[in-house]
Image 1: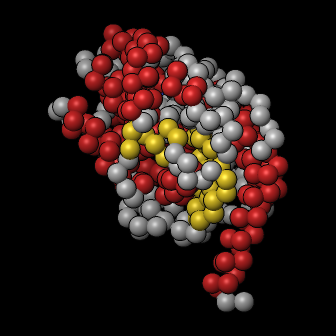
Image 2: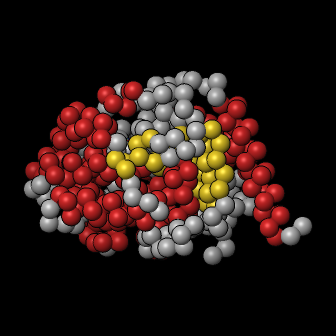
Length: 324
Ligand code: GLN
């Protein structure tokens, strides 16, 4: 077989696997869409997509793979990369650590010993990271985030205005976390502006295809697999993948690392992206969540894939390990 036909055969094979998993988990209707952000409760709970993109730009998509949903906490991973790139590790580590908490993502808890937020994947850390977005005005700062998204997505991001408004109207817990950090000198005195930006970054609309492309860019050490553009610095992707593995799945992160073992990030919109360094990324979208805030079907799909295809990053027999 030629190279191209081998490749096509592999893609077709993986598409069949994703199709089978999709079919198998459609009947799984445990969990509920997030409702603490009222607008999120209005999504169609039955939506279900699996998408994958390889580091050389091949793609697979089954189910509702082009249906848009809000990125939510998955944005935290991208903003973390932006902060590291803009300010460097030391500056970022002064405000936000890298230790998993075992607490829920919206816990009102800081690292008191070091006077910083525990990690960039819980809301406290993410808000502190958003505070680090540079710009004199809200517009400048929105632009910085927008152009970051544009590089990942290959197009201008759209914000779900209803979700944004809904988060703004009801995000008092995040407000409490932010003001606590202001009182401790962890973030600057522009709390409402930073929260506005944080809510906007969470309300960006993506599809499962987009999410897999974002993940594949990170798995490809920062180079977009389709446009070939460098989106984020190579050394920074190492730190992004590390916190994804240790903190990406909320307080389920430890079990996830043990059983699935794929650096991943989930969002309460129902998305999960898993990144296999050097190989590519898989995205699942299904809005019914478990008590941790992770997509129920998403979890099952990743468990199956990791198990059957040796995708755990520490699997000694992993066939997925990239070479570059
Ligand atoms: N915007 C959401 C919040 O701050 C994001 C949380 C999430 O996806 N876990 O509550």
